Length: 166
Image (cartoon, rainbow, N blue to C red; front, side):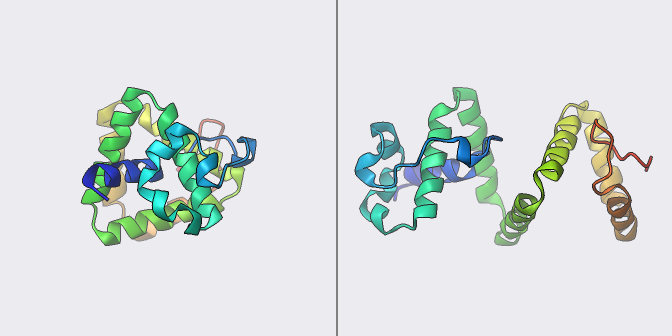
């Protein structure tokens, strides 16, 4: 696999998942010859061993290829930048991120939506305010962070803020 194929593969796997549930998608073609020409082009690095891959892996790869094909040029640029940052992370950092992602996926849908709203609200803040909040969190003692999480946890107002005023 050359560098370009490796980069494309990483982008497919790391592209943000759509918010819609997987059940809403049409059934996944799992045989190589059932894939569209575009899907086969994007998934070419897997062609030789496609039939040996577990069905779940093939489904993830097809979903990723479909997301990539549906992206705008700007979205693809952002995805490439994210992948470049991902490659620069240490194995420990990657492991920590994967672990957080798995914890997020196990949360109830309402909790996931609450966290998405909070994240979006944070992203909409001016850069100076985001940096101020990041610094405040970094300087917060671990026991205070823990207390904040327990206090605000799943209790928030409709805007994603802690309803208890912390």
